[in-house]
Amino acid sequence: MSNELLAARVGALEAMFTRANFLAHLGATIRFDDQYRSIVTLPHKPELEHAMRGVHGGVLATLIDAAAWCAAAVHYPSWIATVEFDVRLLEPVVGEDLVAVGRLVRAGKRIAVAETEVRTAAGRLVAVGGATLSTTRMPFD
Amino acid sequence: MSNELLAARVGALEAMFTRANFLAHLGATIRFDDQYRSIVTLPHKPELEHAMRGVHGGVLATLIDAAAWCAAAVHYPSWIATVEFDVRLLEPVVGEDLVAVGRLVRAGKRIAVAETEVRTAAGRLVAVGGATLSTTRMPFD
Amino acid sequence: MSNELLAARVGALEAMFTRANFLAHLGATIRFDDQYRSIVTLPHKPELEHAMRGVHGGVLATLIDAAAWCAAAVHYPSWIATVEFDVRLLEPVVGEDLVAVGRLVRAGKRIAVAETEVRTAAGRLVAVGGATLSTTRMPFD
Amino acid sequence: MSNELLAARVGALEAMFTRANFLAHLGATIRFDDQYRSIVTLPHKPELEHAMRGVHGGVLATLIDAAAWCAAAVHYPSWIATVEFDVRLLEPVVGEDLVAVGRLVRAGKRIAVAETEVRTAAGRLVAVGGATLSTTRMPFD
Image 1 (cartoon, helix red, strand yellow):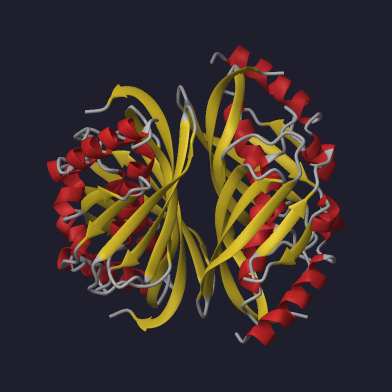
Image 2 (spheres, rainbow over the protein chains, first blue to last red):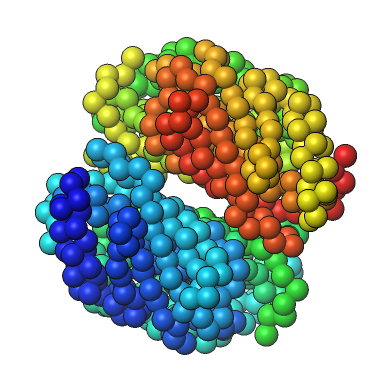
């Protein structure tokens, strides 16, 4: 994609994200950096915790999925669907805001791969993961 | 574990789950069947959707993590921590209630493995995944 | 697929497998059972071991990939390509023959998912894993 | 670990690798760079191919497992065991030599995580993956 098209996609994805109920519901926001990496920010709140007061693995998985999806989606003109993703939980998170950075690994014609690192606001690496995405013909937005 | 201890663990886990903020916040409930498989039920609500109105992959990941964790935790006297898990998304889910069933694959001294199938209330298989869990010495209160 | 087509595919895949250099080189053989599950058998030999004399994780990964691939491929008329797979190693294997059984989880138009269990000849479960496969238009054989 | 201990571990692991039957059998060799990343090199040979003449996914999985294992093992005084690993196959490999580079992500007391990138000798990225390793008390001889 040209840089102009990429910039247009960044705007469309950032706008779409505010309509993405689950992520908005969790309190996450998204932006892209100048290398088209996605940056998903999630302020802490008690609703994100598991029974032992750490942040639930499902929250970290959601950040990994969302950031990887965005990092890939920005390179395609139509909708992409997550096929699979994985999550490695490195350290507990207690009461800290989180920042997930997604990075494209490969944008194929039919399959894309992206990876995400999740850190606390202080920069501590707490989870890593990757995703496989499938292109579709479904128009985007 | 003896069947008596397992039954006691079922009760403790079912009670704990109601204190698990993230899952309670999503609206999930848990029980175990008579083979100590975990059954996590999640009624649909619009907050669980992504921008294209399907259920967000992070929701399915949360169900896979939670059901696998419970299916393993019931076999241990102290806390277990999720080390990693993965999610394969088979079909979109639109507006349907979900049921995740977790099944123990192996309960080792230090590492456990469990797998989860997620179906719609109508029985359609929509996601599969597995998890690796690590035992800890943290008391399970 | 009709049962006749499936039976024809079984024959084609069993024949192809003998030309699959890496698997033939390891000493693996393949067949299908009457539910079209793939069964990959690997007799032990010292070349399969790691430095501590257990069977190398790469060997178990190869069985998981091969059995999952076959369990999916039998349902498609043209070539399928492995997109990703994972491996959970449950117990060490020392000097034992191995049998991997692959099972189709979902055969979509573009994406298939299959899972594999690897057991010793004595029936001990030693590894589990799954795979995502992508359909192609490349003719098969 | 101190740099001296790390250097000693590099030597021990490089020596051990020549005794690792499966990898030696495939023709792989290992070394470490000055950041203690593992570098596993595998010259092409026809025995590594699948039926369509590409390098078999099991070979790429073996490189990912081996490089991740080495990148983690160099940081521990005793044996570590691979718990699980995954493989994302990005592009076919036909007749090319391969180089896998493993990088430590986290070295915990009981669990380590490492990631591997596999490239052709010409630098083309063909597969990525990660692994979870568990520490043991088994002496590393």
